[in-house]
Each structure stands twice: as C-alpha cells, then as structure tokens.
Length: 239
Image (cartoon, rainbow, N blue to C red):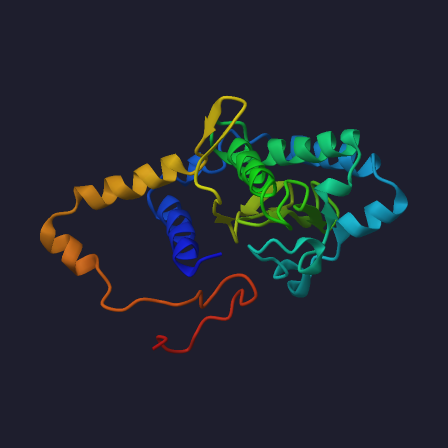
C-alpha cells in the first residue's frame, strides 16, 4: 500500500473522530446483550478447534497484534472468514452487524464494502480476498467481564471493547480502501466517499490564512504509531 494512501486513510479516521460525527462510523448500535447473544450463537456454531482459535486471552500482546496489510493469519489472531461454512459466516457477520450498526455506508455496511473491495481487487491480484479477513474475541463475550471484538484485514481494523455490559472503547480503528471505487453487477461502490466529502468540506471552509497555518512544512514517510507499533509513541518529534 502506498504511503500517501495510508496517510489519507488515517486522516479520514482522525477526521471522523474529531469532527463530532464519529457516531456515523458506528451507528445504531444494538445493546451489548444483543451483541453477546449473537457472539454466543456464532461460537456455538464452531467446532472445538475453531472455538479455541477464535477466543484468545485478553492480554496486551494479543490486543496489539493487528495490521492493515493483507497477511491473513500470518500477522493476526482469530479465524479467517474464508474458512467458515456458510452458516458460520452468516453468524459471524451477525456479530459484526450487531456491534457496528446498520446505518447505510457506515458501520457494518461500510466494513462489508471494504471487504468487497478486496474481493474485487483479488480478481486481478493474488493475496487479496474478502475471505482473507479475520474475526476474533479477546476474552469470552459476556455481560460481566471485559472482552474485545476484532474484525481485521487489508485496509480494515475494528476493535470494540466491552466491560461489564458496556462499550468502553472503539480503538484502534483503521479504515482504508483499494480500489477507491468499482462497479459490480451494475452498482457503483464508493465506501469512503462520505469521509472524503467531509474532509474536502472542512478544507473548503478554511480561508487562505487558515490553510497556510494548517499546512505542515514537512511530510512523513511512514506511520510512527499504529500497526506493528501500537502504543509506541515517540519521545520526540520525528525528523
């Protein structure tokens, strides 16, 4: 993935977080009880080996094992969606839908479109597929303990943390896209268009002096904190 694309993706996430519209990323959330119920239905549909793979310990080492690269289980924990039966996949998606909400082009819908983009990309490039995404639980889903739902893959990292029946965190969150738009069965898909329009709208609202003040004098060649470096904040500004 190109560095410039990565920076745009991260800017989209940051923008949604600070704009007061973060509710549109995860909107119309069901109750934690409904999320736990969907999770238990999914877990019960798995065999013993699959259950062992999908439920891992809630420890820092596991929580920070995520990335935006298309590396499947080589760099993530959990179960590949492509390894599930039709029923299991339906149950897995029901968990994600319950947790992320059903607002059009937001939450679950946006996540599934990002998966679909990888499916489209995979028609011309090896290693990309909607099935090359994972689902995992850090800790066993319940209304009394702390646990986290992970959905991850190329250009997508969703981490929702629950504690005592309440949502206490939705970070790290990474959304990106490749390709930006595509057509399938006569339908044009643009999952990040609303994010793009929000960014350009903010820039258009700034006057010349504000734009000059907001512009950085130097660029960045890579991400300092994020996949593979989660929580490793630099002690001083990078050169």
